[in-house]
Length: 364
Image 1: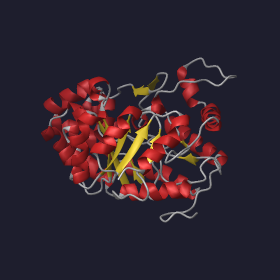
Image 2: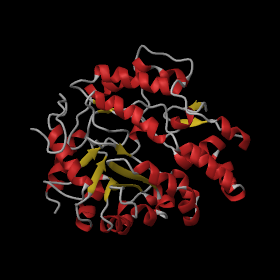
Image 3: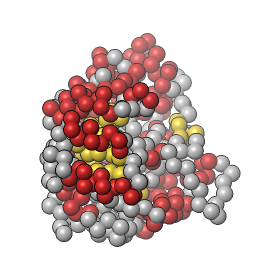
């Protein structure tokens, strides 16, 4: 069946791709076809799985992260042992860690089991004039290599996405060290603003470099969140905002966010916890933002029902939401929240997924 909004993609493990994309596009517009879309995946699963294929060994963690053949073979091994029900799409996205955008400027990353961190490199403001984007940078070349190799192997099997890109103030904080950058904003705000501008100016050239490559291979736009678009899909966010006052958010974050999202087809803003949520009103004012990914956090922040007023506020503003739910929360959540504009992310065993789909079909 041809979907109604883009080209058809034939995947052997996702025969319902077209109808699922129709649901995703309805969701982008706060509409419902037959049911709310569902992604069966644990929150942060892309950063929480550590598993080694036999036959490989490493002297350093960086060697494992940078081994293109291993990374793709690992994904393809997991693909063979996975089922993609509802709006769960098979997506390989090249990943060297969430601060890799900073590394395109010569910053080195320190590797851990499931993530990596930028090693701060700007200790003096005189270094700002030396910051230059380098498409021949080893990190950029490695991500292009991973992308091209996956594109050579993916046909009929899976989608290939683009890497996690954090520009703007998150990138600036990685250049300086987040704690130091908090002081910079207070003590030397003009220099901090200059670094944020530098950290923002190359976002679109980087994004477009990957997007053009993927579109040449008839790939939709998709990354770590696993929600595709036939246009340009972006996940703006600002985890650093949890440490900012509303005044500082408006001054130091909003200008770069507006530039990021302006040419995109679909923007799903990543709101990481209640610290970032204090800026929700400002985010909801942005007409280019289609949806909010609400990440409530862990521990006492985790039960979803306490956040129903926030969820309803987002819906009332005409935005959709990505919501992480535990299975036991589903019935109560459906009783309290209307389904329009809700995409559910649920970590559910394969044996229970079809029952969940049937329940969601009755959600009116």
